[in-house]
Length: 343
Ligand SMILES: CC(C)(COP(=O)(O)OP(=O)(O)OC[C@H]1O[C@@H](n2cnc3c(N)ncnc32)[C@H](O)[C@@H]1OP(=O)(O)O)[C@@H](O)C(=O)NCCC(=O)NCCS
Image 1 (cartoon, rainbow, N blue to C red):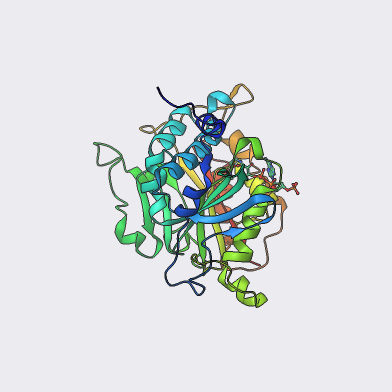
Image 2: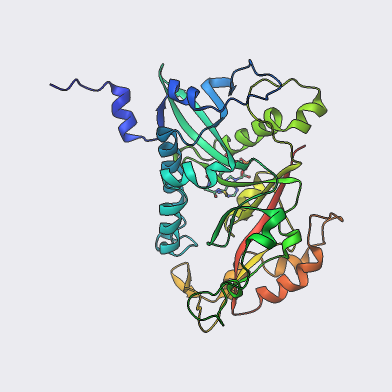
């Protein structure tokens, strides 16, 4: 006769973000070259909370992270009031944030940070996650056709003249307008992706706590500036900050968390007769791409606000092009770029 599962096991089947603490601790990455190799490989915080970089190759952990990301992305579906066509959400859920995707796609080039909290004696609940590029040169994605590129070799590694499908006159990259390659990514920053707090735990400061912990415990420069010690045996981040290619609705959230808009770095989808854009819906009605762009502050923001103080990372000289694209009925805002400087 099978033995009855204990109550935590029952909870674990109901809540895939609940994992055995012992398994989580074993999943934390130990960095052999750490300046403090005998320290524990995670950072304990108050109230049973802890932060660490996990190996996403551990199946239970990959499943828990995938579950958190998949449920969050459901909210972005057009048929649930979100901003993405449902088939796009389903493709991302299948290919990028499935347990397999979490483990084997971007997970191979990113540090997978996890914030968790003890649940009873033996379990931990994953509350939030963020993926941070290990190298400042890493680009997790570039259109739907490329993953894990290096910014420094993008011009050689990407076939910019590839056909969209069978007709060589219809080019895949004609569907997009983005900043020039050399400046596509700010060089000293780590890309982030998959930044999510579990739905039932939002609005309690966990996103801020995860970012603050990354700054104070994992940013090499911040630790050195403060003369603080390195309290764990995991990797440190050597960049100047974080960089995000973000969906339009995320901008206001990211600004609230201390990120700033990278001026003039927006990407757009470009419509062609051979590549129509999917219909856009908002508030239960169909809207044009110009209305969509307006709903995210374009081009108004660039007409009303003063440019930021000179910084090589802003693309102020591209702003007129972004204004032109925002008003073009065949151009739909695809991404903003945002940045976060380690203090
Ligand atoms: C964005 C997200 C990570 C924030 O997590 P959170 O734990 O709820 O955020 P916090 O409680 O730490 O809030 C920190 C600040 O972020 C801002 N913020 C958080 N959620 C916001 C929202 N939905 N809209 C606008 N600002 C928001 C607020 O300014 C807040 O500061 P305040 O409490 O002083 O007002 C979370 O809502 C989430 O997972 N959303 C879905 C996925 C997503 O959009 N990810 C971001 C892009 S990868």
